[in-house]
Length: 124
Image (cartoon, rainbow, N blue to C red; front, side, top):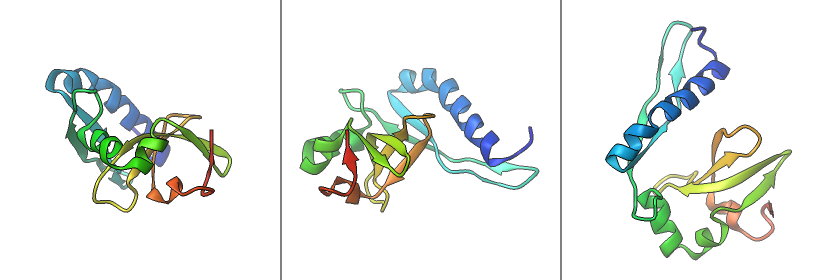
């Protein structure tokens, strides 16, 4: 494998797909976090979270239940620059707490909660 940023993104998507059965078996979500790499090796941590009864990870479900601004934007899409993103999750204790998927290619991105302010982005 030639280790490039593009190949690592493909690799992370393949790992995520391969771990679907493990997620279902143990009732968790598994995310491939950022990777560090050079031309000969790379490391990629996995973040494992419990899933609530609704099927969402516990942090996202808690955010929907207790943060009115997040409940309002969860599942909605917005344009940022030339791309459209869909809000799919929430992570506590981080500056970039709003987890999104870029609709064009399914890549994961994180944004600050400032996107929830009125007028910050164009909601769809």
